[in-house]
Amino acid sequence: MTFVEGAVRVRVPATSANLGPGFDALGIALSLHDELEAEVRPDGLVIEVTGAGAEDVPRDESHLVVRSMRAAFEALGEQPPGLRLSCTNVVPHARGLGSSSAAIVAGVVLARGLVAGGALLVDDDALFRLAARLEGHPDNVAPAFYGGFTISGKDTPPEGEGGFYSVGSAVDPRVEVVVFVPPTPVSTAVARGLLPARVPHAEAAADAGRTALLVAALAGQPEHLWRATRDYLHQSYRRPAMADSLALVDELRDDQVPAVVSGAGPTVLAFTDASGAAALRARCPDGWTSHHLTVDRDGAVLL
Image (tube, rainbow, N blue to C red; front, side):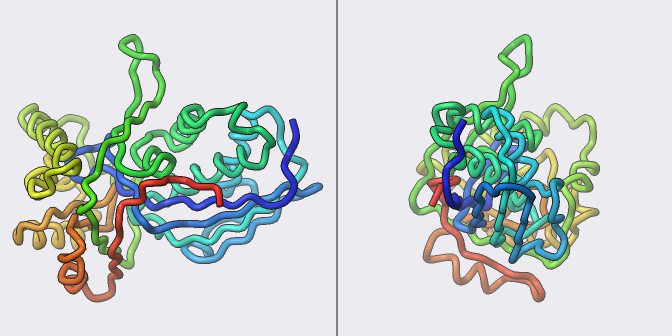
């Protein structure tokens, strides 16, 4: 196996999972990006980080991008003698915008890019499945890798092959979003820990219907997004960990704005179009930040 000379760069989008009712299944890529660069060195490991999380992330083999690169190199058949990694982070950490998935996807794409003919050794679908295994679930990994709006999950033997899958679905060009990012993070583990082991059958059925409607609404009928984003399975249970976020969701939805908790939170995402974004951003709570974003249709891209 031959490593390429020089540096390889990748751009990876932020993502929002669930989108209300599509718990652990739906995800969308957004026009907010981390950019990373890596190259093979004769020895050692050098990590440079600027931007979001720079004060907190490790600078050793435990760094999530490095761990993901190591897993991809293993799949490719050989580890490099040394590495230099430079990360310019824009995606907020622990805010429900897919920062960990962005790191994992960036790592596996960088590793493959550093190997001559890497795409012949590990194709896109295999690389996606590796990234999903590293993350543990595919709902953020899929849009980060493929771009656009994705429906993803994992087959469960004996019904399926036991592998992760992702299917892309259309997004109406009118669909844009505003995200409201609070100053305080909430870990995914904490947010998941608030969910009950069982939910009422009626609520599960209602969520299934809204999820199906959401796919149709995003594809070409955005006038149905408010109804389609109503969730019954997870958001209300997470209120103790993100009361301000759920209060904002309630306030927006009372005004017929299709608003949801982004992923495990605490960021709030509201669907809009180009004409409505400015008015929405004006409703950003004090101390929060907001971004008007479009759908990233490319996913992870080598630059």
